Image 1: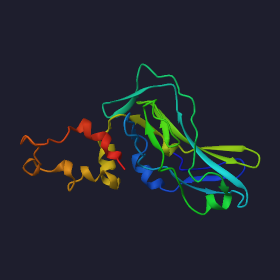
Image 2: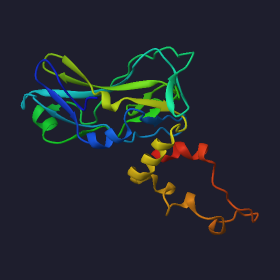
Image 3: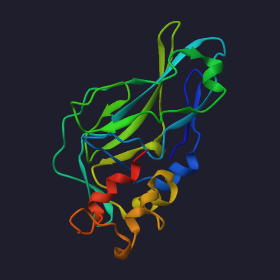
Image 4: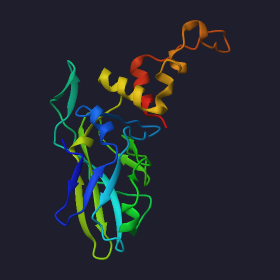
Length: 223
């Protein structure tokens, strides 16, 4: 599995948090929702080397289907399913910094934490990426030199992930709870884990019961 890549022109792209991604790989799962699109966790954050410091570049990202297959999680592992959805058109999203010099891109990590994933075709915007559930995706980073529109693409295998509407693997759930600080509601001190005697009561005196685990799983990526 790769956490860095070098282009023919000598530009190098690497994951700034490769050790975190390594904990989830190769069964990384990302939740898709139709109402409130989610940020990714782990986040896509990169370091770039080899750019000309004074030349203008833009950095873009898109999600590429790895194959024409659809998957399901069965007996503790991902397996190919019978039917697949048509592959969607590539939708590149430019980094929010826009066009900047090579020096700008190389002096700090480049984060795509503003990107949101959804399976709702009606949601539009520079932050939204439309995806299909139960497929395997590869994030692709595009570095474009603005002086002549030359582009180079980078694919880091370690960042591949399966799209789901509810987490499938218990180990993935455990990692999300332990490592994502925004998943506090699922830790021991979180509200979702309170004992029944500590539950608040509604207007009619009925206890507000936490959702079942299948309803909770998508919430782990709230930010």
